[in-house]
Length: 191
Image (cartoon, rainbow, N blue to C red; front, side):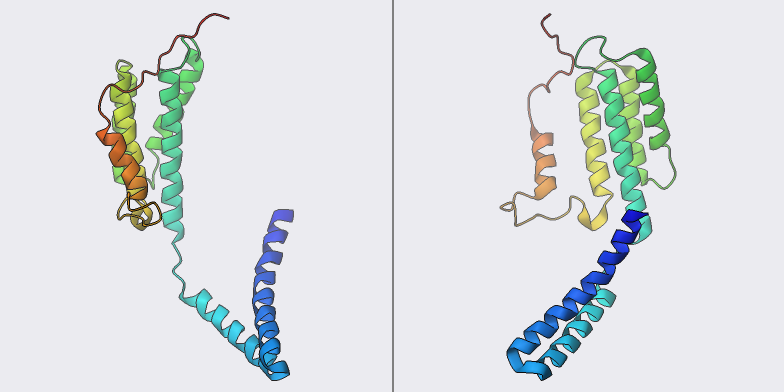
């Protein structure tokens, strides 16, 4: 209840602050007449900005959240299949993570490309043979999740990172990485 009340107070305070700032700047520039003009200009600018700005649909956010949940649950299942320490995950926990991964991968509202990539990862993990193949399939799932985000996905390059392509550059470098991938099974010395 407090969080909801706090968000409503913040939503009311933002317009008050914008209009008040416009009034203050107007008053500094031209006295009371400037304050009235500044208030009107700030109010009109804020109203125009609120009506014109692009708003993502609720459906897009829902689909992105589902894709992220699939990425998380499949990653947890991968960690159960290839634990760092032998015997580090019980059979019950592994079965629970497998069930959660399959349920999230089969949920409705998920982009088709993410469902296909998740199915490929789950098939590879159920074989329980090759950690390198599982890692490669998981990287493909990561790419599918970020590609499903449309304009916020991997398309285009960012100038903020020196033209290296942002997340797309990272994924390209991961794909180009040569040599064997790190093994997930490690043995730790007895302490």
